Image (cartoon, rainbow, N blue to C red; front, side, top):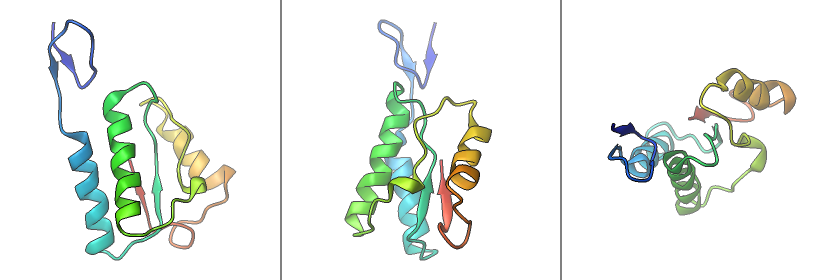
Length: 106
């Protein structure tokens, strides 16, 4: 057995560098597109790679002196909860694309 992107004790894991990938994505949105209001859809709290992506997002915001806005970040969600994430971003918080945020990072 081999695990894909989920660390399981005693099982070899095929993984990607989630931190660097997310960091490059967020830097691109800031440097190339000039975006500074970036919404973020969080993955599961108990998933290492989801946490690495979230850490990269917060690190890049700090590097570029962009304030962290809690309302732009969903609570941790399961991978299958994309529709719930959208509802959190747009319906419950009343955030408006293009006004309250420039892009959604996931």
